[in-house]
Image 1 (tube, rainbow, N blue to C red):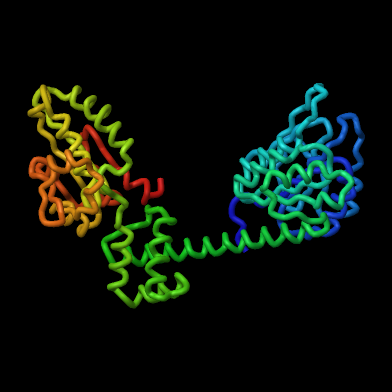
Image 2 (image 1 turned 30 degrees about the vertical axis):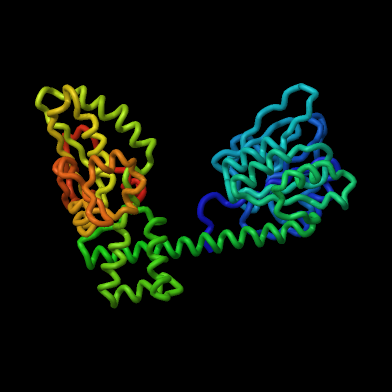
Length: 417
């Protein structure tokens, strides 16, 4: 069983009437590789025997938290009465409470930090108590993807805390303390099984990438695993394979499918003037600044890496053309547009796009920089002549140097950095 990242932490918030419920909770808690933190409202001057008392109800190691202590699985940590406690990088940190008479919201403080630290591996439990401490904290835990459990307020003399928690609308389960450990165990086991499945899939993708590298002059080892996994699953499903293992075996006997999968990996997300805010900044701020710094007669040189089928390249070329007026009218421009996909480069080089690809371009731009051909539009020669398309592998080939501007907007989407 794989448990990647920090282990699950169950934080229990309690106040008046909470001690008996805590004992009942741990009477039913198995040893399951998680850690527990109890945040209970007690007077700063109260001498607690909680470590001793709770040890009678659990086989887990019970101890009072110490500043900077690293949380260990199968341990129960108790907050000192006179301290606030937070968690960061699986370590507990203590700070002294002030002397003010206002309520010390120790549960909210810890739950908020747990949500930020552990995300979906944070589990918040609210037992009996007066007031609303914990209600804010459970919202943070839920927003981070964690689990929220509250005891049933109907069956307790101190329903304030569980009632206010339930009112937030974030509670996953309303249970008696004796039933909570089983719900937590099921949640943890489901997450661990999901993580194990993800790890198995990622390992299989690595094997598939290695096999493609053996069969073709293509190396996808630096691509994002999530992107490759999504596209591989889609092809496996279309070929009626239930598992990546079965699909991998199919790949090893089917060279055509290897080539088809590699082509799917190469497909880029692109479009004319995709992300308009970015292009507005390029047109209004970046290009005017670059042109103003050119020496007389100097050529403006740009490199668009991962250019796909050319839409982004031509979008930038159009922006440049719109800047070439007045003192910049005769500035020479050369745009190097590269990609690993030769089929995509062929489309880019032709510069012919269906109406659906250009329909969102303002009519004035479309009329000025495209030539209509039936139901398609071809890039005008004045734009096409700026661009040189070339096959280039960022992982293997040296980069283009001495550029004034480099765009690699598709690369972060695919590559791991």
